[in-house]
Image (cartoon, rainbow, N blue to C red; front, top):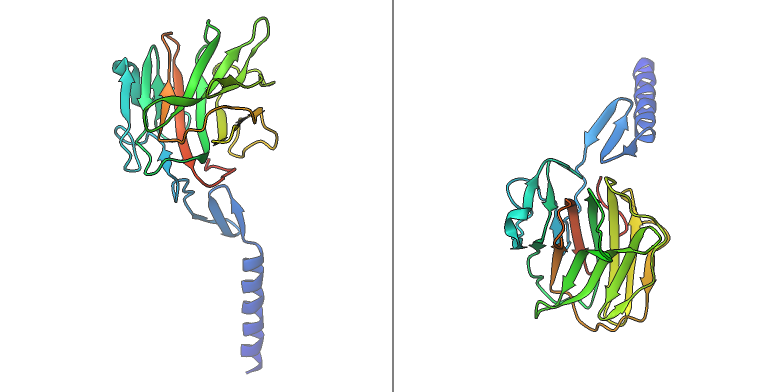
Length: 245
């Protein structure tokens, strides 16, 4: 009996030690020394738009369409992969349109991964356009070429342009672009290089003149031949500040 009690005490101690050693690493859970359970990170739960461009065409049951020079839009690009096994590439007047949202959103948060192989030789490079139910663009996130300074982020809200960001946008660099909009003049862009939204905004404005609501997203490439890449396009009416690796 005494030996049984001792054995039970030892087993209980091992169990407590095992539970206390559990920790989270990446998208897995370490439940003990050398033991990791694969718990998938899922960005899509509850999101209005969640597009990762995996598999053939688009994923997550979303139907995206190609516009402009449609041959220059590739939903299955593997030359440069920002995340997963594929990304979306756009060049030379190609356009990618999202599904129409189930409801028009007067306030929303946005995220996309982005990389460009070159920068525009013009005044600016439009990256993302948010459109209303009449298919009119009311919010544009873009890279502004500030002569003689470096390329930086900028927002166009209705007809009003924000000030310029302070971070130089580099080629062949994977960025996480985060956005916020409310149809009372507010718009914000954060620019980061990891899966957590930066604490400080890159550009913010409160004087925009758009009162429109979001109906669709457009990934945009004007008539220049450099390649741009997009991935992990998320939009929701609830704030989120992290995304899956």
